[in-house]
Amino acid sequence: MSDFKITDKKTTIYLGDNSLQKLNSFLKKHYEHSRKFLIVDENSLKYCYNKVIPFLKDIKNIEIIEIDKGEKNKNLTIVEQVCEVLLEFEADRSSIILNLGGGIIGDIGGFVASIYKRGIDFIQIPTTLLSQVDASVGGKVAVNVGHLKNQAGSFNMPKAVFIYPDFIKTLPKKEFASGMAEMLKHGLIADKNHWEMIHPKNIDIDLIYQSVCIKQSIVQLDPYEKNERKKLNFGHTVGHAIESYFISKKRKTLHGFAVVAGMLIESNLSYQLKLINKNTLTQITTKLDSLYSRLTIEEDEIPHLISLMKNDKKNFSNQINFTLLKNIGEAEINCQVNEDEIIKSLKAYIAVCQ
Ligand SMILES: NC(=O)c1ccc[n+]([C@@H]2O[C@H](COP(=O)([O-])OP(=O)(O)OC[C@H]3O[C@@H](n4cnc5c(N)ncnc54)[C@H](O)[C@@H]3O)[C@@H](O)[C@H]2O)c1
Image 1: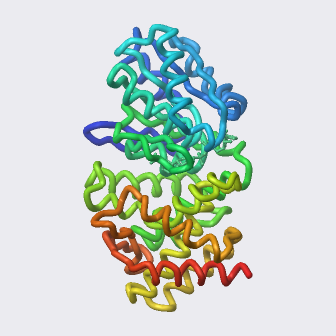
Image 2: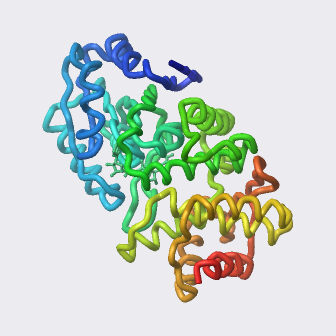
C-alpha cells in the first residue's frame, strides 16, 4: 500500500489507498460546521459515491447535487443552475463544494466555487485518470462558451485534492486511454523516463504519482501561466481547436484523443522548425500511433481549425503561440509559427489517415 502527500502554500494533494480516510479527517478538522455540497454526475454517483460513503457517514450537513454528464454540459447555463441550487439550500460563504467526478465536474464545481458569493472553498475528489493526473491539479477551472473550450474561467486553487486510484477501475477503456494521453504529455514535456514507462499495462499508483508531481512542480513555479506553466499546453493549441471544432459539428471525441492529435501535429511542427530531429519525431509518432487511432479530419476542414487556433487564449500580438518540443522530456514555450507551417503539419497528420 502506497500513500503520498504533496503540499504547497495553497493546497495539499493526498494520493493513495488512504486518501478517503484523509478526506474524512480533513472535513472534520476544517469544515465541521460548514454546509457541504457534493457535486456528482450519474457515473461518479453510480461508481464512486458508494466508495466514498463510508468516509462521509459521520460528516454532517452534506447535500448532493447531480448534474448531467458530458462536455456539452460544461457551460454557463449549468453554472447558473448550480448557483441557484446553492442559493435554494442557503449555502453561505463558509460552505464548501466537493467535486466528485472527472475533469468536467471538477471544472464546473471549481468555477462555481470561484464565483458563488464572490468565492467559496472547494476540494477535488477526481474519479477519472485524466482528472487524477491533470485536471484536479493546478487550480485552473473553466467552462466552455458556445463551442469554444474553457473561455470563461479562473485560477482557483482547491483547498485539497484527494486522489483515490481505485476509482479508475470502473472507467471505460476509452476514458482510461484519454487520461493516459495527458500522462504521455507530461513525459514529453518534462521527463523522458516517464514517457517511456507509460503504457496501458503499466499505469499504477507510482506512475500516477509521478504524473501529478510533474504537473504540480510546473504549476508551483508559475501558477498563473506567465512562463513555465505554458509547457503544459503542448498538444493543446491544436488539440483544443480540434475539440472545439468537433463540438461545433456534434462529432464525438474525448479531450485526451484531441490532445493526442494535437501532440502529433505539434511534434511535426517541432520537427519542421528543426527543434527536434527526424529520429525523435519518429519515436514520438510511432508510440502515439501504436496506442491511439487517428481522428478523421478532412483537408477542407483545415481553415476552420486555423481560425479556432487564432482564438486561442495563449496567443499574443495576433500570432498563434505554441509550446513545442526540443527533445523528448524538454519543451520550448512561446514558439511563433507561421500559418503555412501549421497547414503543412495538419496535412501530414491527415495524410496518414488516408
Ligand atoms: N482544469 C484543468 O486543468 C483541466 C486539465 C485537463 C482537462 N480538463 C478538462 O477535463 C475535461 C475532461 O475530463 P475527463 O476526461 O475526466 O471527462 P469527464 O469528466 O467527462 O469524465 C469522463 C466520463 O467518465 C465518467 N466517469 C467519471 N468517473 C468515473 C468512474 N470512476 N467510473 C466510470 N465512469 C466514470 C463520467 O461520467 C464521464 O462520462 C475536459 O472538459 C477538459 O477540458 C481540465
